[in-house]
Length: 351
Image 1 (tube, rainbow, N blue to C red):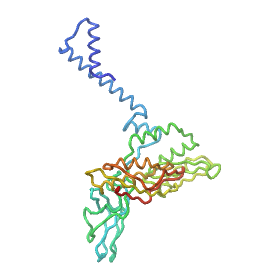
Image 2 (cartoon, helix red, strand yellow):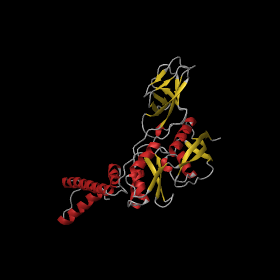
Image 3 (spheres, rainbow, N blue to C red):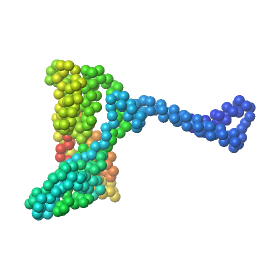
């Protein structure tokens, strides 16, 4: 694209050719010419921006959302992580203690979580587990077990809290590149009402579905098996029922359609990391744990688990200088109806 200076110089040269006069480069005419050149440059920029937004390959933001809408797709929203908060009482409660819904607990890094229902810690008991979720959506809510340690306002009689298991499932709003990939894929595999692409597109349109694998005729002629995942990984019974109900009204006549969860392929991960000098080793290892837990989501459906990809996840964490995997020992090959699921996770300091 031409710059303002190039446009200005072309205008001045054209003026000289047409009039036979050589304008002064500092006079009023030159100033007006330069202002006009700047306006023309703005029009070039506007035309270039319009050209980019006209095609899904280059569109961004709201304009990319419009291309997705034409293909029956929407941008996936951010999701809060979910897990368990455990509230503790020293020596056992002397009476029933109520843990209100919305009780907030936090990590040392001020990542906040809130209980999603009210529970009662019975007299004589020393602890109670309560379902909870991150206050804010996004990957920051994916924290390892034991990292929640304080309460914003402690319920009466409660001495402490923690999270016995990791908070998982949090993810940010779908980015432009991920949405663009889905939009372009919908053009490459055009649905016709009967093929696998049709069932995949319709299932992905159900809120909460992250990935779909379609296996036609697996149980014989006239059968279609759909494996679906949630963004956090394995789907809930409610999500499976929602997809089944939606597709029952759209399937072909005589087709035996089954929507099911994929088989989870449990994968233990043991990695040692070397912390960059000047960084907090404990904080870096916690960040690596959170990154790996976030990586194991529903988008891995039917995709081989590559050590190179796991290494990329680890190395992208700020403060990691080097790493070494002890498990898995090699790449994991999975089938179309399988989902790699994180088993035991251990992140240790490299000796």
